[in-house]
Image (cartoon, rainbow, N blue to C red):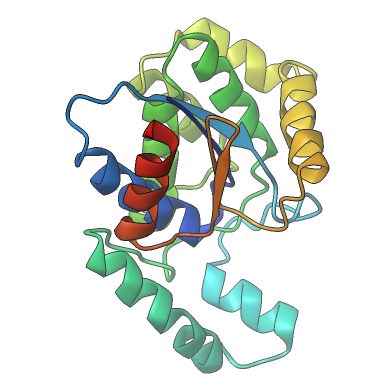
Length: 209
């Protein structure tokens, strides 16, 4: 079964959805699943905001206090905790995810897409790493198993894998994706959002019928 996932590294529900899906897949130990991560940018216009955490960024953007911004995120932090994830929005540094997506596209050519997604998600939401920073991106990509020189080339040449990113985003628009995460199972069924594990299990059962 092929599962395509449209996702953005900056999306807190995408990491939660990844965990929900993984838990569901564990219910099918004999199943053969191919996961393909697809690029999506919630806000392609975001300028890198090194040194500015998510709470402050959203407070300024929405015209609310930092305290109100923190309150808005409490539910997300609790939901992440329920699937074993430790979110630290106070450390998360706002980034434009385009370069990360291009590196993920490189990782996909090496069958390391899932590893790269996991490392980027953890770096952003849990560890407070700066995904605007070239050295950080290189370190994380090499950790996923990518070749140092190939990663450097992708970062330095902004046209590399850009077409792949844009193609994924165009495809999302064509099939009506409004937000992420968005999961497509064998091009038959779709699950939108970080749904409960049961929703994924039921969808997989339907596809396997």
